[in-house]
Image (cartoon, rainbow, N blue to C red; front, side, top):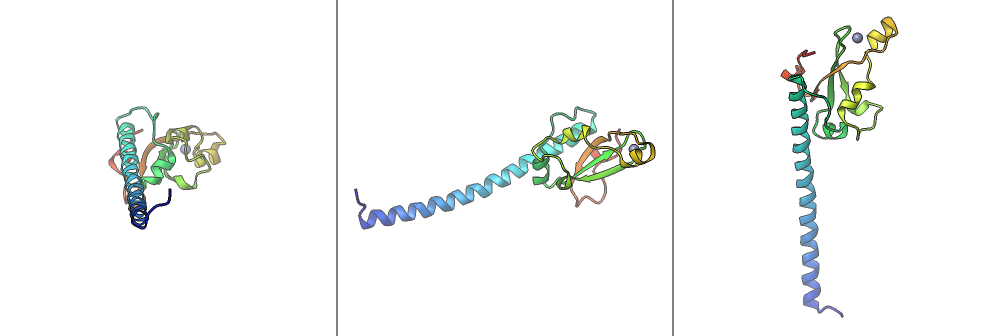
Length: 140
Ligand SMILES: [Zn+2]
């Protein structure tokens, strides 16, 4: 059934209104996810600091989205600390942070002894942090 002129205008207005609403909801949803991811990173950092399990952990992509783009690691053998830039990793970003524990290795130890030493995962950090957060101070 054809729409009258008035109905067509009403329909066009409603369509435009719902499109704006949808765009706004998408923006708000992205912001809410970012907050949730940030909380998950902070919770994981706190859990690492108090000696809790590394598993479960936020997905790498979620940490990056929350602007936690650095993972502080520390070698238990040589004591060297390093911050790994997560977006540069050749590792699926949908995998949780703790899965990196079995693939990262300490380069100085490898160079010195040829042995593969897995570093401890210390904390997720933001690049803007000039010094390690309390949770990133050498706990292990
Ligand atoms: Zn080492």
